[in-house]
Amino acid sequence: MKIDSISLHHINMPLVAPFETSFGREVDRECIIILIRSGGLIGYGECVADQLPGYNYETVGTAWHIIKDYIAQLMLGQDVKDAADFQNRVSGIRGHLLAKAGIEMALWDLLGKRDKKSLREMLGGKRDKVEVGVSVGLQESPEVLVRNVTDYVKSGYARVKIKIKPGRDVGDASAVRKAFPNLRLQVDANSAYSLESAQSLQPFDEMNLLLIEQPLFEDDIWDHHKLQEQFRTPICLDESILSPRHARYAIEMKACRIINIKAGRVGGLSQAVEVHDLCLAHEMPVWCGGMLETGVGRASNLALASLPNFILPGDISASDRYYKRDITHERFSLNNDSTIDVPRGVGLGVTIDEDALSSFTLAHLELKPM
Ligand code: OSB
Ligand code: MG
Image (cartoon, rainbow, N blue to C red; front, side, top):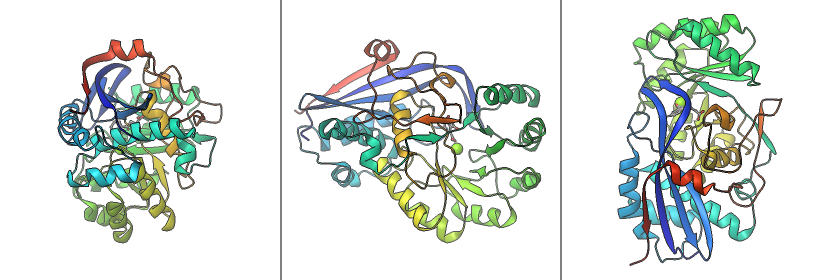
């Protein structure tokens, strides 16, 4: 596909409720929506870098710079054949995986529109709908947390993840467990513990949790191995897995028993599929993580999560859990079996609400061949 132009929209969208994790509190979410034009078609992508480098070192600012000054220069006016060709072009750019993934998503949307295929079909997804859960941020108190979880359970979520941090871990989880003895429950620390401080999490082993997500440093696969040896509950890695190579390290080191896959974090959907395939070959179950995506990124997550080894429910909630107004005309809703339908249309299978997109846009840039 000859790339005619690449447009970037830096957007800010108000969240329906603040989202607090061990690395910070967000009341609105920023990201970059990417438009790639080719032969009269437009492909859309979402770069999930946020305003702050809390989850990942990338930000909207760094991704903007890397896309504008480096990635776009390797594509504009050129024939980019597919995701593999794209990955090959950007292989000289070290890191900046969220930036690369946003562009790759827009390429997939374009390819699907050109070939009249859905993303699910192109990636090899099998399911029509995927099991999902909800990720609940830190609340004022365990009581407020239980009230929040109750609302989500009532609205149909059969799996709940709660965020934890030192001092807000065992108490919070046991309050939820007491209120919901049979709920599929898991916790996410976003790297808030050391091997030493994580010893205080031992009571989790008596709470029948699905998994403990990313307790330790993002660059420390080996200490996760040591911690996993001390826990019966599966440890799941999120931040630590930045590539298929990291997934192999984690498997070989027995650093975890489950992997959370986010296409953004591993540098694109093609890389996410590679991680998926590797995990499948090693009988390591995976699930699809979320980054509070707009309808664009949510459509991509649903297609990815339809692959066979996505065995656990994904952090892919209904649109109304995140945004009152979204940038896609399509809104995603929860079926009564705690699933969400995978889009069927070509590419991502979503259409853009131009008014919404422009009203959320803080900055806009169009890049064309020189
Ligand atoms: O660690 O999984 C995470 C959101 C932003 C950054 C990191 C994480 C999250 C979530 C929310 O847990 C998942 C979602 O519902 O999109
Ligand atoms: Mg996580």
